[in-house]
Amino acid sequence: MLLRRPGQVVVITHAHPAHLGVRHLAGGLLKVYYLPVPVLTASATVPNFLLFLPYVRSLLVRESIDLVHGHASLSSLALEAVLHAPLLGVRTVWTDHSLFGFGDAVGVLTNKLLRGCLRNLDAGICVSHTGCILAIHSQSGERALR
Image (cartoon, rainbow, N blue to C red; front, side, top):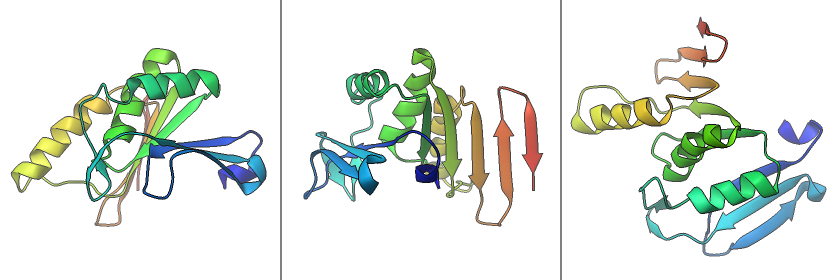
C-alpha cells in the first residue's frame, strides 16, 4: 500500500542470518536496512534504549525520513525508534495487535513500558483480541473507538 504512494519506503530491522546491510527491493521503492545488532533469542534484540540510537539517528537524517511507524509491543528497535524520532522532529505512528491485559506481571510491566515509550506518539492504532479498534490521534486530540 505504501509502495503505491509517492516517495520511498525505508524499513529498518535487525540482521537475519541471510541478510546484513542494505537491500533494495520493489524496483528501488523499498529499501531495507539490516542493522548489525546482537539477537538474543526468537529474533529479539537487546532492549536498552540506547543501542539503536546511533543507527536510527543516522538513517532518519540520511534518508530524510518524515514518519516513523512501529509495531509489536516487545520490539526494542520499534520502541526505541518511536521514542527518539520526536526528538529529531520526525512524526510517529504506532500499531499494535497484541495488547496485554493486567492479569499477570508480564502484562503489567509491558503496559508500563509502553506507557513511557509511546507517550509522544502522533497517532496510534491498537487492535485487541476482542476485535475492538482504538485509534488515538494525540496531536489533534481526536480519539475514535470502534
